View 1 (cartoon, rainbow, N blue to C red):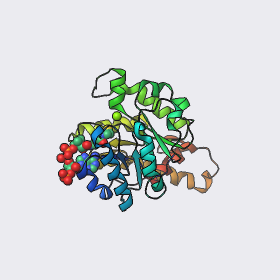
View 2: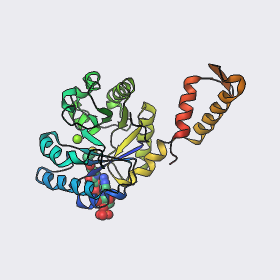
View 3: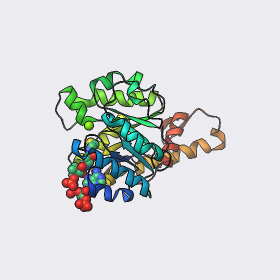
Length: 271
Ligand code: COA
Ligand code: MG
């Protein structure tokens, strides 16, 4: 699991010259430079060239920079990108992972996109892959594979999304929710972020820079949660409570696992 905030994880289409031109300045918690679905077949070579150009230039504001490879062009991607691993490039995102073997051969941290029925079904085996850092839900491909249509509450994806979170937590991985396609609908995005947060995701993948602010705000602790966290830390710090397993905070039972949650929230960045 990555111990950086991963609230906003922005896909940047490497085929899009204008998007790539400002890639270093994008203030998301993480970037995924995309060589897969957002690049047309005729654009793939140029997209890879743009990614190497951006990594060569460096200077990213985003603390974590990943590249989503197109497994059909894995060899060319590795030839071009290996030298940047640990030098500006923090790892690879692998799309449509259906088995742990799909994650081998990268010799770098890898992130698995779970976006097929097979991927969901094989999560337990996928999570044993060496070098795996996190899971990323891919709702567009998953809906297509499941032959379901979007609903406002994402009822059609709940089983898959919860399975992704469950496996990530069981295996100590980061876990990022899927994209929200209607990129000018802030209210819809906010609702979906809240749903993703309630399901247990660390953050959300995004398709447009305009989605960063809302997402960072929703995945940060609320004022009420911060008040609760400060109270929990203060009560456990009292001399008479140093060895206690359970205490009372404002009429509510609080145990030591709550103290861990409180500390995590207090360490979170504010929006
Ligand atoms: N990352 C960086 N910059 C982006 C961006 C992104 N994901 N999405 C848009 N921009 C840039 C545009 O290039 C444009 O730049 P400009 O002002 O220099 O012209 C600016 O932000 C405003 O863009 P806008 O006109 O609002 O959107 P658009 O119509 O150009 O693009 C999409 C809309 C959806 C096509 C585009 O956001 C996109 O391709 N998103 C990512 C898709 C992707 O990676 N999919 C794969 C994962 S699901
Ligand atoms: Mg896809």
